[in-house]
Length: 113
Length: 109
Image 1 (cartoon, rainbow over the protein chains, first blue to last red):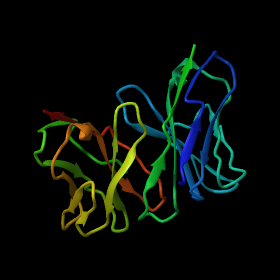
Image 2 (cartoon, rainbow over the protein chains, first blue to last red):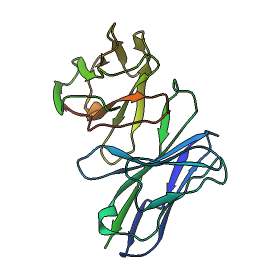
Image 3 (cartoon, rainbow over the protein chains, first blue to last red):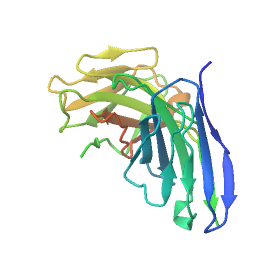
Image 4 (tube, one colour):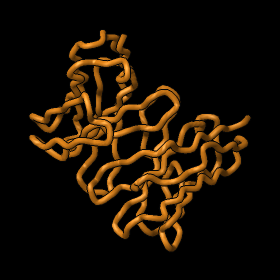
């Protein structure tokens, strides 16, 4: 069965370190998204991609970057981790058609100390 | 603003129907309405979506107002496993999913 997986599921890192969170989907979807969710809040869009070599900023993109070199993967990089980036990160993918649903990963819980 | 408006929380008794409302008064004619839910410690999962007509699937029904400014997610018989945060989302021409705070549904045994 097709799926979307995130790794690692949990990570603790120190302030100032570079961190990369992986997202891999086997749906062959063009669209991929990264969200963050802070305790007690909804999901906020960080970056998104509509296809290979395409990346776009979301509402909370400062301090994050993504690259899309193939259809299956959209890694999220925190260039210099800050305590304010402690959060749960969710990756999602969908087909391009607005009438189709998105599939979400199980999330990565990141703690910056 | 692409976000929708939902009540912060709702309660239901087990095995009773639940009607979760959503207001999207600024919706355009080509935006789809999607509903997702998030169980504790899990990623969001798809529930249902629609454009103009009412929709049914094995999980729920979606009733969309004739003017499309509001919609209602209907769970026909709530179970304890339906306790979750439910998100109503407009899927815009730009194809993004913009989440609001959602409605936290509690199901009482």
